[in-house]
Amino acid sequence: MKPGKQSISLVSVALCLLMTARCSQDTRFTSNVLKSDVFTQLSANSQYDFLWVLDNSNSMIPVRTQVVDNLNIFLQILNSRKAIDYRMAATTTDYISHAGALVSNTNGLRVVTSGSVDPIGDFASIVNNVQNTATSFWEQGLESAYKAVQNQGSLFMRTGVPLIVIFLTDEDDYSCQANCFGEEPETNPNDVVYPTSRYINFFKDGLAAGGTSVMMFPIVGDPETSSCTPYSYGLRYMEVQTALESGQSGSICPAEVMESYNNIARVIADLGVRFPLSNQASGSNIAVYVDNVEIPYSEDDGYVYEASTNSIVFTGNSIPQNGQTIEILYTEQTGA
Image (cartoon, rainbow, N blue to C red):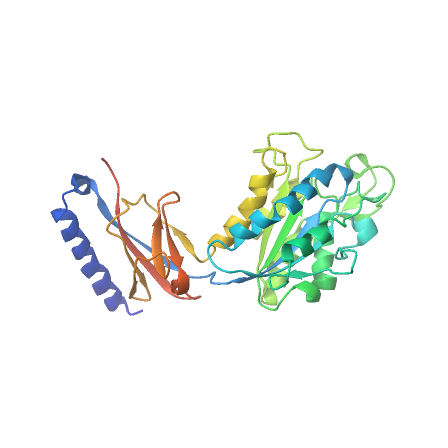
């Protein structure tokens, strides 16, 4: 975009909006201020690959049941903005017994796709086949995810498609480098855990070098937000997620776990579609441009203003493509 052209466009529209505001019968406009937000589209993807890392200990059976029972709601939210082309696979936090192997259903199915005849039933059959083992007490979710991607990524990951890694566990990560035996890791004086840098380097830099971006969503015990006291807080998972600067953590506690679960779908659905405004908009006198082309207000193919989130949401075929510039002009509501 040439600087001169952008300036002319913004000034012209600004003058039009100001004139409209001046003539309006709504006196609130006397306290409104014209604002401009500019974005670059970075997330026009409609394809995502999911790796679910499930704690297979008995204490997590209720949560795994909730995952299955509410999968239809999760997928409804996921597809609420645009149709998502997804692949889903699962492994467990039990690295000693499973070493990051993908969980299969009783018929050997390990990967579910959005094009499956019954994706909800297929994924439910995989989750329902997660088995408790004698070594499930030693949760090593980060290492399990690492090895699942490293050794079996070709089964569920597509080149250039963002990877979504979801952890569901009521204990911290104890990914073990040495002396992985004896008493439980919380009180084991001899075990040596891998540093979190191993997983930060792999998921943030290693996969990015091959064109794969990663979003991480640990649903764990969070000392800041959890309403219950889990077996241990998921501090290592949260540390890796924070370092990745994508995704977010959620609480595993019964009162919050479903909101945490559904929020994953909500965050992904909003990517590249919903653009929060930097100031509270008045709700009128909004103009939206993509690469200097004005986008119409339309619930079917254009944009809408979502008051509940103070955001512009693109609809239909008007979702900007990667690299395009989005300009939003609006009046800020500064008083009644």
